[in-house]
Length: 175
Image 1 (spheres, rainbow, N blue to C red):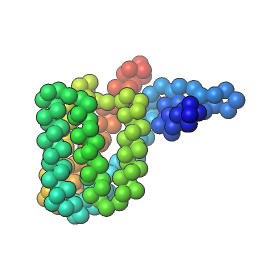
Image 2 (tube, one colour):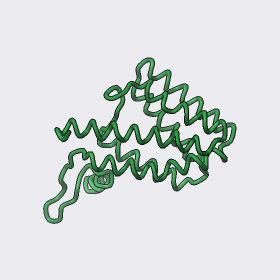
Image 3 (cartoon, rainbow, N blue to C red):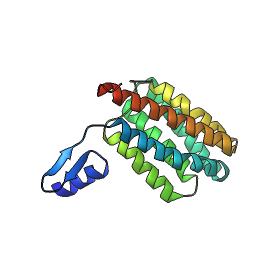
Image 4 (tube, rainbow, N blue to C red):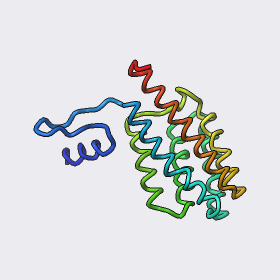
């Protein structure tokens, strides 16, 4: 069980297997975070385009409920609840693309970032600031505007990635 757990941590980029030596715990890497966000941009931007034309009215109502929940959690503040709502928002949008494999891969990429404790919440921006970045995404999806949805998702992910890379660089004394 321990070996399996360590292999799972290796999949998340938290440890590295070294032949004949065991496992080495890895530091958070700005490069790794940048690479993860590059992949997320490659997947989630086209997914937003697809979702704009394919999401049901019920799914759009669920997105609105998640965004409302994010705002409520941001006002408390309840970071754990906020992050669950944020994750649900992204998962609903990705599922709305109709490509469930893409949604699963994107969720795995997100897990790689959260597993190493990388978050901008209340470090580079407030929870309410993060929630506000989701409003243009929801508005574009509701309007069935594929290009606006893609642009809003790209802006949100690029901003988040840039902030995380900057934070981790500063924490590691690399800036």
